[in-house]
Length: 361
Image 1: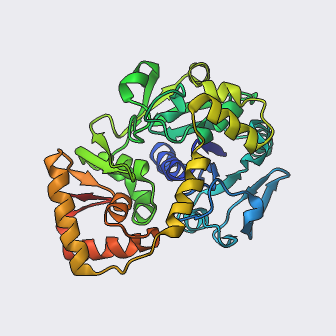
Image 2: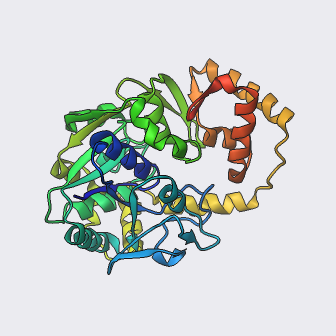
């Protein structure tokens, strides 16, 4: 009895997939296979874009086109990846989406996995709902990965259920724009549901999945995220999981329709630039160059806490109640590698403000 969950955008979607599998099938003796990109924030992986099998050592073959990432696997420097640590801390099998051959390549990987495992259920999971983007939304930042997985799933001759968790928590598509597409409520996460991934949430940099877990634990307010300081409402809708018709999603997502026959990642990028006005890999390329030019400053506790007070006072005046450690790292002009040091400093000095995995202002 095998279940397959496709983490639409990689990163935090893979963590949410593990949380959903435990919530829906916790009584089952097995665990889902999670098919996901190795595509992490630059603070984890300084190399722009997604990683392929040739960027790792220690992968294990599953099918001719699919490799799994065990705990012993390691990214080849300078690349980084959260997947080996996820595999070490969670009981699931993490299979690697390789997007180098476009949507046709991912379709082939899906077909091989389905033929190999003969899964009883197949879910395509997206946190936030940007998989339902048209492509022209001004807040849309990362349409490429979701469009690729959506396009591939729509070409597979197997029943696949599209699930959107935490509507609006990615800050990319206004939830009011996509709510009409929601079908049945599949699940509402609770605090208990977050326990299987609680250790992961302590270190994983995903902001959307962090907020998903926080809302499941009852946190409400406004959370400021990203380098741009985007405000995200934390509401009762946050911990919900809705089913969406796969064909409706494809009809709405122009980029997904356009990339259906792509055979290279370069083709996908070019279509993303044409349709959405940008490629998020271009954004990562530009930001990585900017980060290289920045001088990492020493993390001085007194200076950091003073700067934190000033930021919190200003943010509260704008109605912000929570933020993420990733955002704090950027606000305080620290480097990504100092995120964990900052987190430890703040929690040790002001433990009452830690609303796991968020920081309360």
